[in-house]
Image (tube, rainbow, N blue to C red; front, top):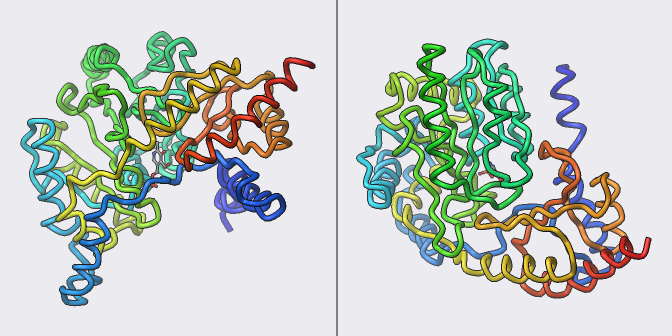
Length: 396
Ligand code: PLP
């Protein structure tokens, strides 16, 4: 058997590990006594038209339409609806030929990494802190995974480190904004600076350097803060999108890759994505959900609930004395651990029934992530435990 795959299968990610552990704790202490902030499972119901549309399709359409294979690249109506929705929002001119339906962002990313890289010398950069699974997906493509260390002042792009690391083998850089695990949204200024930098490097190395924009949290942005549409400012951008968070459908596995026309050689890059999907066995995203998207591409869950949660948890933890990165989007709060070893801090927090994810696997030490996509009651009830945890460290 493949030892690498065995390792991946036998060691769960720390997030999954904690998610399972919190189930055990809930059995032991009671559901309302355990504050599980481990996993980014949306707590808000899907937009109401999503379920209605699914029922309508199941009730009124033929089973071949509902459950049969679509084309490998996806159902034309779904692809067209997505292109139209993006055009309305960003003033672009996408068509169905720019959209490839996938089984969520995980498959979008795996497909894109496979499509863009060819040799073990090729490198894909992620900016710390980053979504833990990038490493797995990049490794599977055969390329090298390189981590740009975090800028702990801004938690945006660390240009100094990026400039030191970039080299002729750099094929792509992943941009995830709003970010998991910090909730930070990269500002237009920073993205424009990145674009200028990459354009120069493309010229110098004489090959494309892609931005892979991983955007499952694109719509979850608070206080009217802008999430810039990166393909409008940089030509070689591919978007990996998912409806897991915006429509609260993480278990239904639906998303897409967008390959805009201004990507160099875009038609062939699209075909390489199609080939990568084929080689990975990801062809034909779930048909029922593709059909739903063809009617609900502009829908959105009630993200206001996340903003309310953000306001409570950020303000209350800061009041207690915790140092938090201010989140403008997604549903994560990144908090400085109260000891250097975030793993030990996570263990101490567990004694107070607080399930927090240590930051090491996000590519930075000394923090924990709080996924606040939980009920408001869970947040309110957890505050006493956060106070007690803080007092424990203060009195040490
Ligand atoms: N990218 C980021 C930043 C995520 O947070 C997640 C899931 O939490 C994914 C990708 C994977 O999303 P999906 O469930 O749609 O595969």
